[in-house]
Image 1 (cartoon, rainbow, N blue to C red):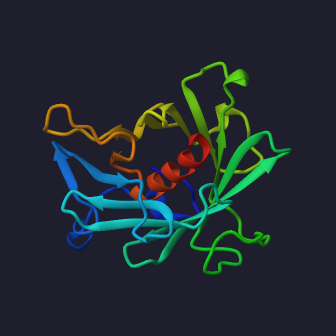
Image 2 (cartoon, one colour):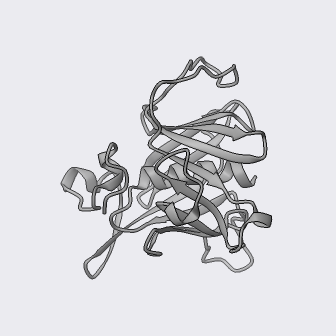
Length: 225
C-alpha cells in the first residue's frame, strides 16, 4: 500500500524480519499480521504532559513529552528519545484546527517546546484537518488526512478518521474505506474495573505504519481534548 511516496516507512508492508519482530509485537490471524500497542496518556517525565506507548511484551516503543497542555508542536519519539515525527499546528483564521506532519524534528527546539515557532522550509508529509460537524454531512467523520496542505475536499483524503476519539472508539480508513488502524478502550479481566480513557489500545493492521498511526493519535488528542 502506498501512502506518501517521500516517506517509505509509512508505506512499507508489515512484513517483519527477525529484528523487527522485537520492535513491533505481532498477532497472527491466518495470513494477517496486526500490531497491538497499549497507549498510556502519561509522560515518563514528571513535569511533562505526554504519552507512553508499550507493546504486548511490556517494551517501551514510543514516548511523547510535552511541557504545555495544548502545545503548537508535538514530537513523537522512539524509546531512546530519537525524534521520529513532528506534528505542528496550522490554523487558518483561527477557525479550523489543522496539523501538518513532518519527518524527524524541525524548528527551534529548546528544552521547552513553548517558544514561538520558526518557519520551516521542510515540506510536510501530510496534513490532518479537523472536520467541523456543522459543515460535515457525515457527522461520524472527525478528521481527514491529506497529502497536501492545500487540499480540503474529503473526496481527496488519503485517510479519514471516523468514530469518537473522546470515547476512544474510532477507526482510520483509507480511500477505499478499508480500516487500517483502530483506537479502542482497553478491557480488563476484572469485573467493575475500567482503565477509562487514559489507557487504551492502538491496533494497526498490515500495510499501515504503527509510528504514523501513533502520530494520528497525538493529533486527534490535541483536536478533541
